[in-house]
Image (cartoon, rainbow, N blue to C red; front, side, top):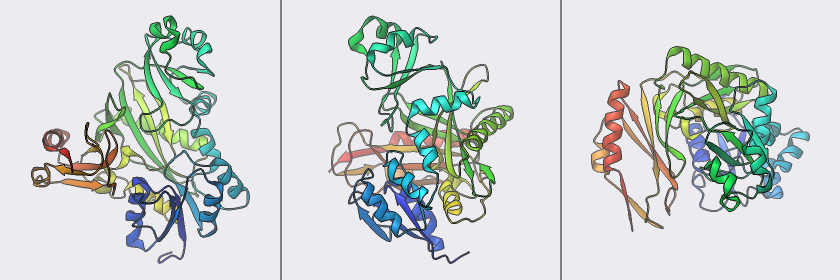
Length: 384
């Protein structure tokens, strides 16, 4: 099994691809990537094909040199992958799943058809349909999501239903959208599920996310989630049910809402390593990245238990800082026990851009919350 002569092709060379390669280097796995020049993973890949993720010819070129393909972002040329799979190329996860995931409307319809708990929703093709659709939804607020193209908090708006009904010009999107009922005071949970070609399943401990309301990006993550054992098991059951019904092979992040009554609603599924699993590099016996490598290499799944409670803080580009930058406060941060910094090899920053993350380990959630507050208070970024 090892050493292997297999080559893994990654469509995308961002930070997720970078960390996937870092996890596989101890096993001497070869990686080829497709992405623009100077992407985060470019310095680690054995071969870098420079091009667009929407370029069919470039994807076919990548596939010609690789034994198995995976992707670290959803917004890629679906047709090329469908063609390759039809010709017998191994692609994990399957393009059949990507077709559903790329369209948030198809995703919600999949949940509805397969009795997966999700919030009530309506599909609107254009602004002229918003009034009719909004009137069918309960509550004062509605989450409006572009069906295609949204990413990292973009393409999602929390809107006031009354305002949208009274002011046509206030409607934020002209393209097709999903309109979803808003879950008040929800706790946001994530369960990462791994499933291999033999159908073996593993879940990582449920993580709890706190979001930056302006950027709509994860600001803090804590694992294990501070929920009852009953809720933890319920979240895992729902997450595994999603991936079984998708017939998924690969690594998937199932994002969920937990309401005050203990109801769980599936929000979205990501068919790749996820921001809510970065902490697993230090916090678990097997990281999400090693687990995906095991699946791609047809190796047994690894143990996913937590070694210690963990927190993760996204290192986002600071307001007013554009271009070359320097991170400040590291002397204090690095003096803390159990603090690990990951930078994504991005030479230029802009506000709210994901530049890295920091993982914090401790003996209790209270301890890591204290450390997280120190990190947050001292972490800074200045313009060079």
